[in-house]
Amino acid sequence: MARLTKLLPLVRSTEPEDRNQTRVLDAALVAFLDFGVKRTSMVEVARRCGLSLATLYRRFSSKSDLIQAVGLRQTREFVEQVDAALQRHIDQDADAEQQIVELFAAFISGLRDNQLVHRLLATEPELVLPYLTTRGAPVLELGRDYVAEFITRLQREGRLPEYDPEPLAEMIARTALSLALTPQTVIPLEDEQAIRRFARDHVAVSFRVP
Image (cartoon, rainbow, N blue to C red):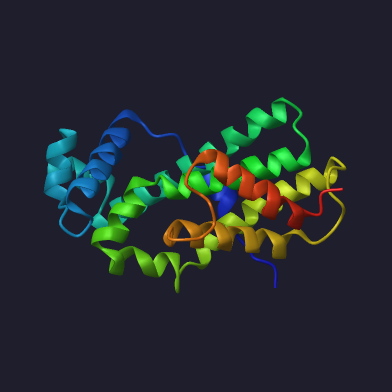
């Protein structure tokens, strides 16, 4: 059965933040990094962003709403970072292999360098791990749809042969998430160049580059 609503367009179509929303989300993120999500109160967020508690609650009716807003912003920024990394190479008319390498590198780097995810994995794993494992379907769906969109574009441009992009897209999304969650690996991912060598030698071939 076809999915009725896809997450990727929803993430990309998020309304721009106004100044107060930016202040609130910036303050909440820093507080989450300092104290963790559980120990951060709405009072603390209001104090840090310079708004009254009543004003904060008018914008976010509960702490859960605020947490979701921070998560959505983190997701949007991740997608924008990957978009920007790819666009630079598209503008340079990079071949399919180069674009695949940059896609994988951007995925790994974006997940690996996310401070909030790693802060929570280190101090509150019971809070974040379910959303990346047993309840991680939305995260995988977002990654799968992004990679499937990428493959479809390359197919349309004649840079890749025709095939169903979703199974491969899901494999790439699962691999990237696993490497980010469990960085202890024999795969040489210690720096950006190593990531790109691995992607060129082992990932690009799975896309059936002519």
